[in-house]
Length: 140
Length: 140
DNA sequence: ATGGTTGCAAACACTTTGCACATGA
DNA sequence: TCATGTGCAAAGTGTTTGCAACCAT
Image 1 (cartoon, chains in turn red, blue, purple, yellow):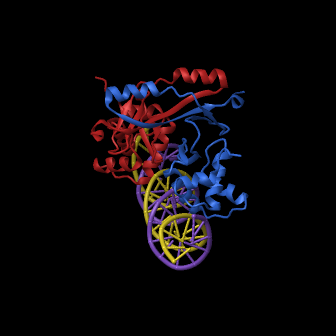
Image 2: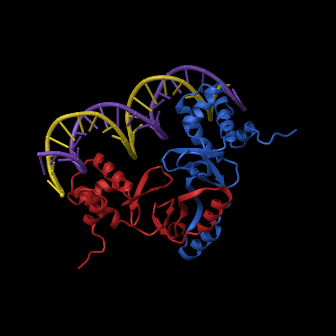
């Protein structure tokens, strides 16, 4: 029987030792429906009986980002949040009133990127795209 | 004879008093070809003989942003930069090697935004979009 | 055993706040 | 004059660093 996401295995594959804190961070990212900041992660861990220092959370999230297991997302507040690394490419809609975050998957930028590559010579590695506004509930 | 951008007038139009520091910040933003952070602004001011405290620069840039005279831009380093407010809508390409920033004007997101509005009920006020990669020079 | 990991204290960078003084309208 | 703007000191966040102790392999 094969688990869909084996966090231990993920860690080993990128040469990281398996520790409770790292497993916890991966689990948190995987289960979250929207990106988490380091505060969220710390609470998640302590809520699951894993006691870690803030500093360790920063170190873990940084190394996971380096190794591609987490992806940084920047919203308008300037605070870094992190997304589970192996989700398909997507962007976010953030409700400015209730803070709700929804994933947006249809990305229509490939053609534009190709055009920029041709006309300006840019080699585009990636882009960041987030939408801000009001969600259906807050609109009422 | 009409000046293209009269900073004093811009300030008055949004009910702000005209002060040397504010004029300097507006001039800096207007003349810059890429967004500036508060450090850049402070240097620009002192370089032009206008002596201001960091704190004042923060206050000025915040109020200009409130009133729409400046626009905040967030790159991947998480540091806030600011763009001159009354430029036409555009996004940026950031070279990850040399740090060069170029404006990208062709935005193709309107149709996607409309679709999201219809299917999900989001009222989208704005979006952030930046591209990251290597510029033509750094590619060689 | 030993090199990678963590906790703790401290340092850092960026931004905001409080209050008294200064200045533009 | 008087509301607004500014300087200075201090506090608040989010993040990184140094070092000794700890633990996964």
